[in-house]
Length: 358
Image (cartoon, rainbow, N blue to C red; front, side):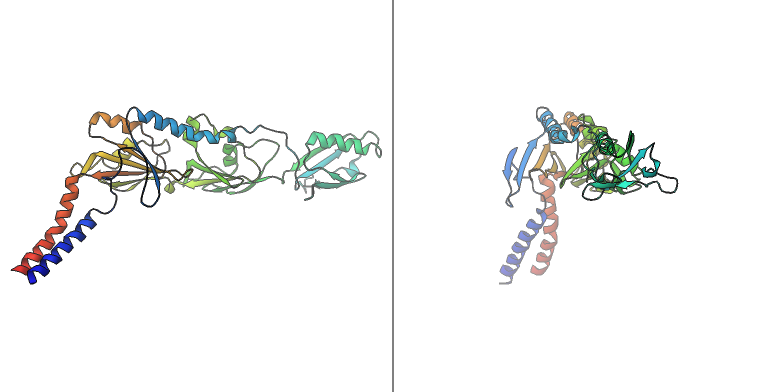
């Protein structure tokens, strides 16, 4: 009876140890390639990296940037006045009704109210919002002709306070800023905020526009022909500069070391990641099973890229494969390594069982 009890206990322990030893990431049940769905309903696209498929992958990465194109196609338009803007009115022949900045009050002028109007002598309420300065100059002069001789009026904006945007995150002088009659690019906006501080990541900028967040990878966009010098700030835009510590690649499995790696400003390849992780473990790693896991926020698809480095000549593929922020590199173990780990956990139970029998 005792033998049966011990045998049952040993068998149960063996089952539990086997489950524990083989838990975690599993790759033996992955398809060779193609789209499939996990038990939890996650759509996965597994791509085997070869000299034929790598150009397709890189082309897809560039194509994914094409939806940013409309951001760079905004045409420069004449500034239209907004509620909050402060105007000066200079009438050379009638200084008593002129409103111009003074040494003591730089904002001495007429502010456009929230309904878009200003109050001016003779013409009373005048709708200025939504109009360009040339329009305002022309209309005000025409309205003053019945009251003044040769009303040679010059209207200027002395303080732009109508259209705001924000720069926040890791910049030296975060805050709200105002758009003027001069176009403001993303780089100009960052310069007005004092530039990116030491903790900020100059390659990772988020633009929030009308409720939509755009992740601007400056290096990838520049290489694709989209310069942030040409991306103009719009009213109510928000620029957020991410901290460097958030831009990492995670290495797991049978690499030389398992640790998060900060992404270099110039970008990294899979070869760079493996090199900084001290390569793959020569005793336990399966060089034919190296995977890169990448989430896709646009369609909820998880991309898994499979690379075999069994042949040293294929290391060039790793050098060509470009990494993204938050990618996970997983190096699988050999079948023998998995078995040895199971056995190493069984042996203590075997010793206990043997002692009990004796």
